[in-house]
Amino acid sequence: MLQYISKFMANLSVALLVGGCSGTAQTIDNPPLSEYRGLYTPSNTQEVQSAMHTNHPDYDWGLWGHNLKKAVADNLTDDMYAIVDGKRNPKQFCFSSAALYDAVRNYIIDQYGSGDETYSERISIMPMDNQLACTCSQCKGKGNSPGNATPAVTEFVTRLAQEFPLHQFFTSAYHTTKQAPSAALPANVGVFISSIPLPVQVDFTQSKGYREFQSMVAAWKKKCPRIYVWDYERNFDDYLSPFPCLLAMQSRLQLYSKLGILGVFFNGSGDDYSAFDDMQTHVLARLMDNPNLNVKDAVADYFQQNYPITAPILLKYYWGLEERIRTTNRELPLYGTMAQMNRIYLNASEFVAFRRQLDAASKQTMGEERHRLNALLTSLAYTQLEMYRCGLLPKDADMAAEMKEILKGHSEIKGMVNRDETGHTIAKYLEQWK
Ligand SMILES: [Zn+2]
Image (cartoon, rainbow, N blue to C red; front, side):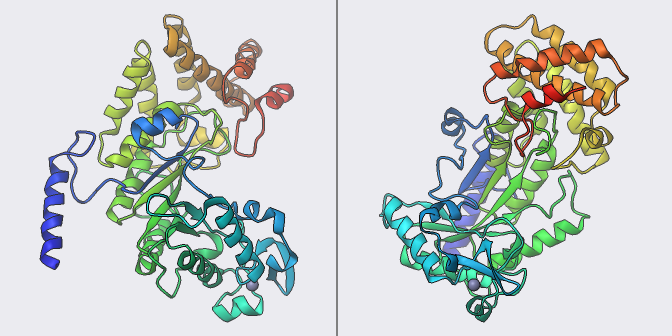
């Protein structure tokens, strides 16, 4: 048996060295992610999903993320809630609650049945998104303590997984469930480990978060071999400005692949427009196939195919930002203001020159390229307005008025409503802009 495995591994290694799906040579050190390749971005359309075999959480999960409350909403009773500091707290569940178990069980039967050889559903069982853990006597008896809900949550998931052996269950290693369970989980249970400890930078190997992340993966792997990573690839405070994260994401994917992680979910701007998302979604999908891809070539390919006239301008500017992030090894902020972005990678006068040049060149374009550039230039008008508002550019009333006019066009562009994760709208921003 062992011989068979090593022969199989040797063949696999040869196959991977000969060439991956993208035609670029790979080594066994960085195999592609094999099970789940999720992107929550506006450009990960159904067309892209089938062309690039990506996943999207809206289409391939029975129950996703922290949505457990929605599944049991019609049957919520007081005893489903956690005891925190001796009091019932509706902000968290008690995973020892028999009523909660029955409600989830009935939901699965109603919605998905028990599954069969050809049909299995992915079902997430995660606590509500906060730091609260139930410490009722039953949960404490299982090992829960303030801040640690892993014992009760994993027992709950294990029971469901045994009752529905044909479905796939997923829990999370995040907030109160960071700690790995003490017993091995059934084969049809997986875990999403959050990448939050890892700083978003090209070389994170000297960071404390890197050691923390690695030891979390190692501890979970002993009890649950099906590990996926929940990752982040956007400035969630500003969807409309450039965010040069591809080289940083490549480093992370190389690490995931080395650690034997089987899937990744990139949380982006959801359905909301974000600058360069079409190109970044495309390159991230390719990187999930081959973490050793030449990222600059992939960016250039995308621009050449989709922006035939303006590709050189787009590549020069965008790649300049990626290069700056690589040479300075600065950390990209997942929540960052315009002033922070300027300190880290955006240069105001360089940006203005790029935007002006792109605007002029866009007049020569037609069809799909013109359509894409119109959206991008509208989005970048917000960036320029923010630069005036934050005093990063000298006051210029005429130019600011022009940017406001351009940004007003957002209402005609699909998906361009919100400027951040909180849902602050562009319309409100324009109303309030001074
Ligand atoms: Zn409890």
